Amino acid sequence: MFTESKMTYDMAEIEAFLRAERGKVLSEAEWRFRMRGYGYNLRRTDTGVEVARLPQNTVLGTLSI
Image (tube, rainbow, N blue to C red; front, side):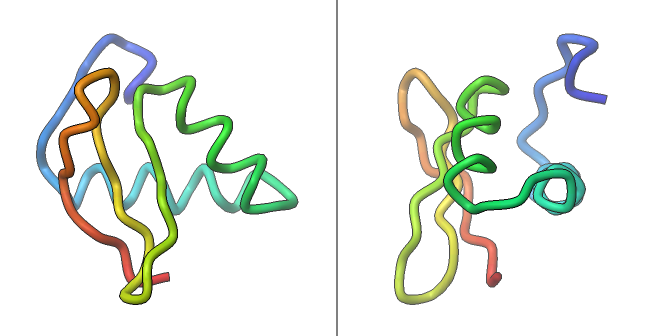
């Protein structure tokens, strides 16, 4: 989906992708590292995980995880 150079701003697609990738790793640190490779910056907040697009670091939304 995202490896085909398709970038989307649809938060539902991004959330599905992030959750699928989270299931593939053992730790949250590894998950954040992998998502940086896909162009997403993940930051833990009080309300969940803030998702931003790199390199501009534009916030796209928040996941409640």
